[in-house]
Image (cartoon, rainbow, N blue to C red; front, side):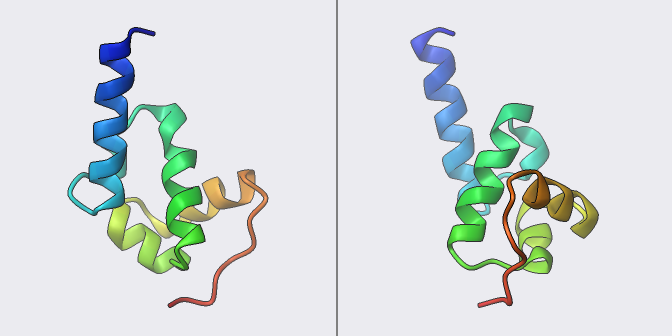
Length: 74
């Protein structure tokens, strides 16, 4: 992967974390990074779904793949 590609991926991930870009705009390998970061910030599955544009099912599936327990919300 080139430095330019890494930089572009990092910019998209930052935009998704800020709620400026939907999760589907990210590379698939970055979906887990997005869920991990937002989960660590205290987002519950509903908040994560609203923030990323994904369904709560998709958010829950990714969260479970990461071995994370559901948050109670902020």
